[in-house]
Length: 281
Image (cartoon, rainbow, N blue to C red; front, side, top):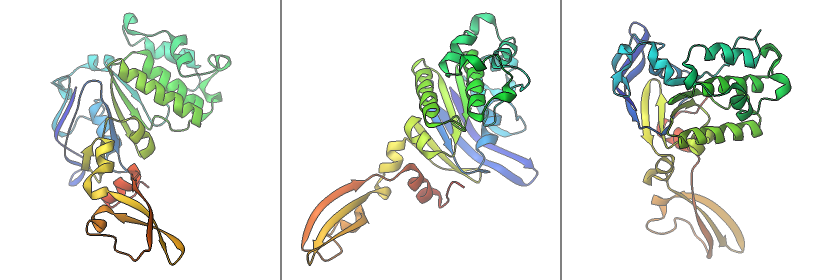
């Protein structure tokens, strides 16, 4: 569905933002693009959605170079920006009616249906967006994306500003859209969201992709294997965490009795730090 090859981009001459990026995304896949602020996540998404065109390399959607596609491409993609993209003097209903006017009527989902789906309370649907909380604006923005029933969803920090119940709701909606065969590209620095939702994840730092694999493979690769060991020595219970390589030839400590051994799965953030040498801030 999406192919990216040798993608390079600079805002200023001689200052590369993206460096020979390569990846592909299959139809119906949830693909996570993870990295700290300034890593190139949003720039990549802007290129994939046709907002930035002065790049080198290949960027294809459905087999066609995006620079050669006309405005019809926007019938097939929906973009949820990190900051809600709405007219604040208009209500949620008015916003959706306006944005819906750019699409064929037969493509659109019912406005009340999508507002119900994102759980935007009925008493607020006719009120101006400027009276909404951040979480309510995020719900209205997601409804705007879903209303056009796009085949590809680009979601930038999709659960930003949501309370726990809202985050769960959005994650369930994303899974439901995937079940319909939609392709979903998520940019985020929230490792827990990526781990929970994504089929594959790419780590990007300073415009370079440092790793790309499934969450399970990233966390369970040989280099990231750890075990928690509880043991007894002189009547005292001790605990230690070791790399699996450290115990191949026996335990490197003195003990009277091994009480328990448990494999330890690193969090996605642990893996990110180990792979990239960087945190997410």
